[in-house]
Image (cartoon, rainbow, N blue to C red):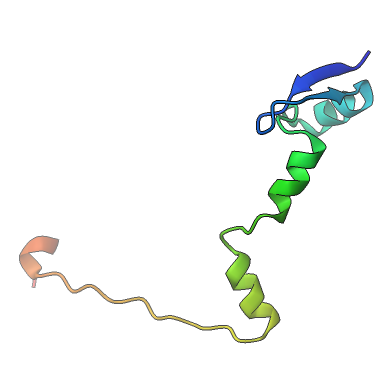
Length: 80
């Protein structure tokens, strides 16, 4: 018997079948909170690594050096 869940984003009711339920249980995943359409929409959105992958595809990887922070000896522990 299928279970009906409510989508977190669009609040529509979607079907969660027994087959899907058993698959999620085997994988030890929680039941889905979004419908198929909203999951696909979320995958289409740009992520935080989106720009990095674009530069890697164009072979224009930019390496940035981290700024070194120099602390005074009394801040670090007073040793010299």
